[in-house]
Every structure is written in structure tokens, then in C-alpha cells.
Length: 108
Image 1 (tube, rainbow, N blue to C red):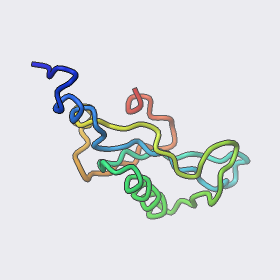
Image 2 (image 1 turned 90 degrees about the vertical axis):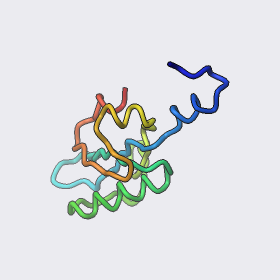
Image 3 (image 1 turned 45 degrees about the horizontal axis):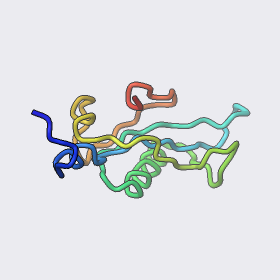
Image 4 (image 1 turned 30 degrees about the vertical axis):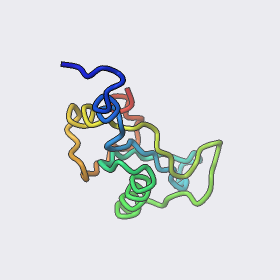
């Protein structure tokens, strides 16, 4: 059963429970800067961004200090509603490294 659009439960089911976050990395041997993607099971966007930066640093990656090529160093790309998180197997509070390839499955 689906709740009518005016029902507060409908808004709750679409409210973000997590975020897909991209972190811009300092250029290494390559001339281009890479981005690393993370799935963060936190509803607060700012907290999710900080957790993603902490994860990148704990992986030994160097996070860019300033924007480059029109990209921010840390950017929340897409909210993850609870239904989408369950479908992708991301629990609240969980964090997952999605790698350097754009995670299309997580962004649709």
C-alpha cells in the first residue's frame, strides 16, 4: 500500500537516510585529478561529507584542498532514501568505499 502524496509518511520515505559522496583527490603521477566515491548511511549531508573525507584519509588518499576543474573537493552527489539504501544493502550508519569509477547503480 502506497501512502497518498499529502501523507507525511510519503515524505519520510523519500527523505534522505544516506548520501553518495564524491571526494576529489590530489593529483598523483597522473596529470588528472581523480574522484573517489563513497556511500554513507547518514541522513545529515554535512556529516556524510565529513565521514567520506575521513574515509579517504584513512585509506591513505590525499584529498584536494581546493576546487579544480569546476569540481568541489567534497560533493554530496545524490541522497539515498531508506528504500534505496535497503535495496543496495547499506545500513544506517554504515559507510562504504565505492571506488574511483562513477557508481551509476548508486546514482540512479
